[in-house]
Length: 236
Image (cartoon, rainbow, N blue to C red; front, top):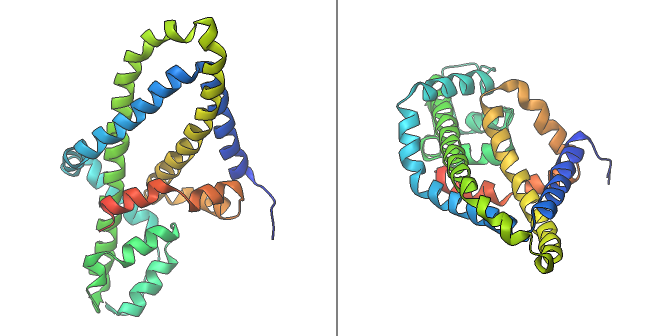
């Protein structure tokens, strides 16, 4: 088994180490507030993302993303006007995108329920599915970022508490441990962002090649809990 590491591993390790050091310096009190802010942001995004998604679908963003998706994932053609279920599966398997994304496409109702499809209709069904998925991800990212910025402004008053001498050492130690957890979550979020960027830009395909050939980066990628959460929201 090859355990050689590449730049994707280095990038992931640097993110986690940087998170540990930042949270160590910030301290447990402010780190907890940051974690609380993240949880609140997730809840707010869960509540508001349908409205933001609908807004984005009715804006120029939707056509922009759709154009990028179409150009990125469909470069090959197929002979004949009608594609069977087997041909659909073969075409999807050849798409330059993550395996879990391919599985979502195969299980999508608009594609799964059709044994025979005109290739153009099949292509459009795939493009629409991936576009809607990306718009959903973008909506969640936007809501999370806006919510965390608002809560970050409110955290400035916690500096006084974290500077009390007795609390300072404990504050730093637990801050480091919490930083490790936050670092892993940040890596998972980075993967979600990469998926969105990759789906609209074929030039990013080398990133997934590097991840697949890595050790640490691949381990975290294959065990990304956020993938399952987002797939549950937008994967149908």
